[in-house]
Image (cartoon, rainbow over all chains, first blue to last red; front, side, top):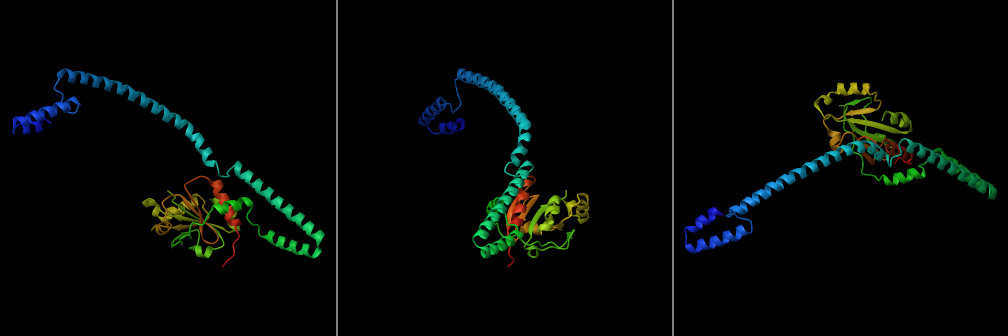
Length: 192
Length: 102
C-alpha cells in the first residue's frame, strides 16, 4: 500500500488526495496498515490474549484426542474379530450350518420316501420308475438350498487366466484348462 | 489351506499356490522350497518370479485367493487373511455344483 501511494504521489496532488482517502477507507476496514497507535496496541493485546486462549484450547483438544485414541485402542481389538466373523459361518456358525444342512438333507430324504410310498400305493409300475430316478439322483448329491443361495451370489467374474509358469514345486506344471471339472483355488502368496 | 487340501482334495478340489516374490531374497527358489518343507505345504506351487501370472490376473495383493469353478470361471475373490469359514462354505458349494463336461 505504501509503495503504491508513494508512486502515485509523484504525479499530482489530486492523486495524492485520492490515495489518502483510499488508504483511509482500507484501514477503516482493517485491511491496510493502521496509523492509530492506540488502536494497534489494543489490537495487539487482544491478539496475544486470543493466542493464549487458543493455546489452552488446543491443549484440551489434544488431550481429548489422545484419550479417545487410547480408548479406541482398548476397545477395537476386542470387537474387530467379532465383526469379521459376522456373516461367515466359522467356529460355532460352521457347526450350526453343518447341523442345518444335515436337517435339510434328512427332510429331503423323508419327503422322497413319502412320495415313494404314495406313488407305490397308487400305481406299482410308476412308483418303481420314480424310485430308480431318485436313487440315481442321490448318487450325486446336489447343492443344498443354502448352497444354491450362495452359488447364486457367486456370479461368474470372467474366465480365470491360464497359468504360464514353468517352474513348479510339489507338482508337474499344471494348466487350468486340464483341470476343468475341478474346483481350483489359485492363491497368490509369498513366504517372506 | 493345508486343512482344505486334506479335506477336499478327493472331492476334486485343487489348490495352486502362485509364489510371486515381493523382495529379492524371495526370488530364490531354494528359499521357497525350504519354506514349503517348513510349513509342510503339500499342494502345487508355481514360481512366478517374472510376475507373469500375477500380471495376467491383474492382481495387487498378498495374499489373494481366486476361487475358480468347474467351468474355469472365477466365482469369488478373497483378499487378505480371515473369513476362512465363509471361504470354506464357498468351496463346498462350488464342489456341490453340478458339472457336465462339454
